[in-house]
Length: 401
Ligand SMILES: Nc1ccn([C@@H]2O[C@H](COP(=O)(O)OP(=O)(O)OP(=O)(O)O)[C@@H](O)[C@H]2O)c(=O)n1
Ligand SMILES: C[C@](O)(CO)[C@H](O)COP(=O)(O)O
Image (cartoon, rainbow, N blue to C red; front, side):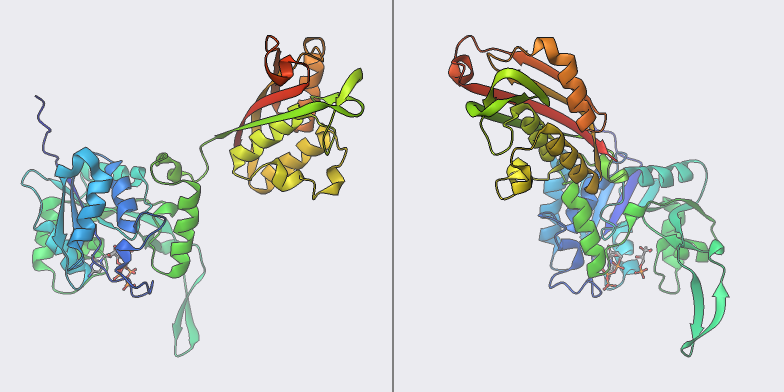
C-alpha cells in the first residue's frame, strides 16, 4: 500500500466574498461561468498545479455548496481539500484559511476564487520564487493604460505607468512569514503581499498572466464565459494558458447519386464522358465532404447552413467556390486549414489515374493546405457497389490562424 506524502505546499482559495460589484443574486464564487461555478473552475486549475493541501474559504452558510464543488473538482484527491468559513473581509477569510493549515506545510499560496481561470504555470512561478529564497512572491502585469492622478474633477498629475504593476493571485509566502505578518497586522490590506510588505518583508514579483484576471464586474464574467465556452472544463485545461493552442479535427460525409445533367465533376475535376452526379450544385461529393469536415472542425455548422438551396449563387457551383468560401469562413473565425484527408467510395470514375491532379486542385482551392485522396469500391455492396452514386468521407485538421 502506498502512502501519499503530506504536501509542503498549501493553497488557500478565498471564496467568501459577496461579489457586490458583480451584482448576482448569490455569492460570487458560486456564480456559473458555464455549468460550473467560478469556484469549481478555480479549484480545477489549482489541482492542475503541484500537489498541495487546499483550503477553500467559503461564505458563511455556503459551506455545503463549496463541498459540492470540491467533491466534483478533486475526485480521489478530495482528502487534500478542506472547507472553512470565511470572514467579513478578505483578510479575515485568509486568516481563517491559515488556521486550517496542516503541520508540514512550509509554503502557502493565497488565491482568489474570483481569478478562476488563472493557469497552472503562474502557481509554479510563485512557488519557484519562494523555493529560491524569497519571503513572498506576487504575479503582476504591467499597467497598460495611461494613468492620471485626479483631484476635484481635474487632472493634477500624470503618473509614470512604468513604475506601476497590477497585482494578481496566487501570491505565495513562506508560511512562517505569512502567519507572523497576519498575527501583527494593524490594518486591513487588499492583498497579502501588501500585508507582508508592511511587516517589513521583501515580496518578489513574477510574471502574471492575462488569464488570471479577476472576475469583478459583469463584463469580466462575460469575458470568462466566452473563454470557457471555447474550451470547456473536462476537455483539456492547459488550453487556457494560451486560449488557442489546440488544433481541432472535424469529419464530413456526402453522397450523390448519378443522374445529373451534363458530365461528372468530382474531387474538383471535370471528368469528360463520365455521368454527372445530381445535386443543387455540381454534386461533387468529395468537395462537399471536405466542406463539412472543415466546418465541423471549426464549430461553424455544416454545408446546409452556408451553401444550402437558399443560396442560389451556389447552384451548379464547382469545388473551388465551395472550398474557397469555406476557407474564408474559417479565416473569419480565426482558423486556417492544417490538412485534409478524404476517401471516395465509388465504382467509377477510376480515381487512381488522376489522384495527384485531384489532390492539387483541392489543395489549391484550400489555399495550399495538404490534401490526400484515397478511393475504394465496396465489393458490389450498397448503393455505391451497385453503381448508383458516389460517397465521400473526409477528415480535416485546422489550426489557429
Ligand atoms: N470577505 C471576503 C471578501 C472577499 N473574499 C474573496 O477574495 C477574493 C477577491 O475579492 P473580490 O472579488 O475583489 O471581492 P468580493 O467581496 O467578492 O466582491 P465585491 O468587492 O465586488 O463585493 C474573492 O475570491 C473573494 O471571494 C473572501 O474570501 N472573503
Ligand atoms: C488580492 C487581489 O486580487 C489583488 O488584486 C485583491 O483581491 C484585489 O481586490 P480589489 O480591491 O478588488 O482590487
